[in-house]
Amino acid sequence: MRKAIFAAMATLMLGACTGSEPATGASLGRFEVIGVEDDDMLKMRAGPGTGYIVIVGLPNGTVLWVQSCQQTGGTRWCKVYLDRARGLKGYVSWAYLREM
Image (cartoon, rainbow, N blue to C red; front, side, top):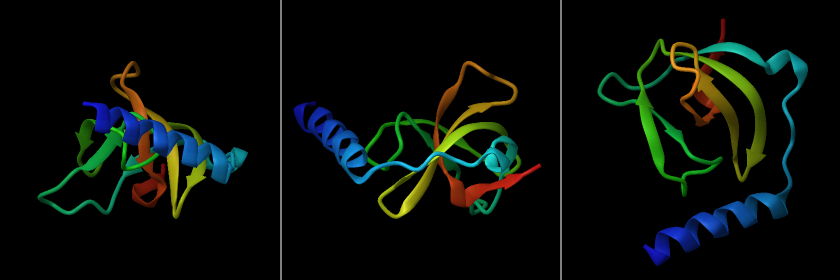
């Protein structure tokens, strides 16, 4: 448990130190999940990085609303919520999103 907390805090601190880049106005809005292998799902995480816990898996075609995006390491992470369950919020990789 201590290791998990430490890893999450370290990832958060690293993200703060490397800076973040807000999304442009054109990149906000309604998007769908694409490009996920048939036997896999896009992981919605509690924070912008792979060190955060997985909240839920999202199959291709899932509709999301993108609130903002930021660069963390080599990945652009977007803060999203589900179209059909707006209380379910988290972060996903920009690479698997297509604007609708």
